[in-house]
Image 1 (cartoon, rainbow, N blue to C red):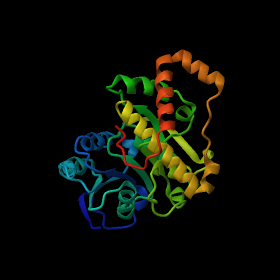
Image 2 (tube, rainbow, N blue to C red):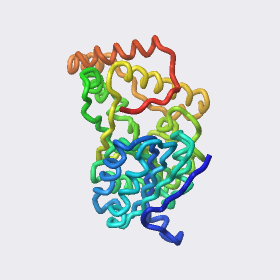
Image 3 (cartoon, rainbow, N blue to C red):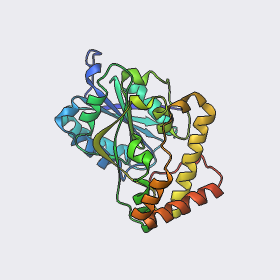
Length: 294
């Protein structure tokens, strides 16, 4: 495996400013259609974001992802932010995060998917949440990007109302840890569900969901929804098998019968779609294949 590091803006020569930087690490594999929007949303953050470095860990890209990142150099220079492009020969999100960690200079780390767009208040609110001395995990308020297919629209309108999504600091596509929290694990392990692994390294009282929203795309169509749900279930099962000690931090709220009936009345078609997909997932073996989140 080879990795090339290109510091496109904000070349730092001293360690004395590291504690001031907020490091955003983006794992990107063939994201030419999304990475510009992701980076532009970061550049639009308000002044409470402070000093920021963005590391794009481009892993085994065969499209124009790297070219798009290069094209953002001037915009980052104008913001006086640090932009780093890593060209990684081997595909894989955990390895991309590890390479990004090795290149990062900030003590507080934000891990972001390349197809996520953050509202302007996000980085500032995460900075404030991560400013404590004790271990902290923080994420934003998830907002599903309006789906284009009927089936995903109906599925999403039910999913966003589930107790886990409403109260669980989900962290799908965006999660962060302060310096003390990042010490909870070493390198990212080669697991299916990196977000679940990180979240469960923190007790519920150590997890914060800030008010700022991030816009997260959901896969389109019945077949893709079933594939992703199978992969998610396999990811959770893998964590339970490999890291059983982390399960004590799981606080997933099971939906009560009364809540379920309430949701059925609120979104009856959404409930039927969700139940159908859950049934199909149970009939299909779990999958560890990588599936895009849109």
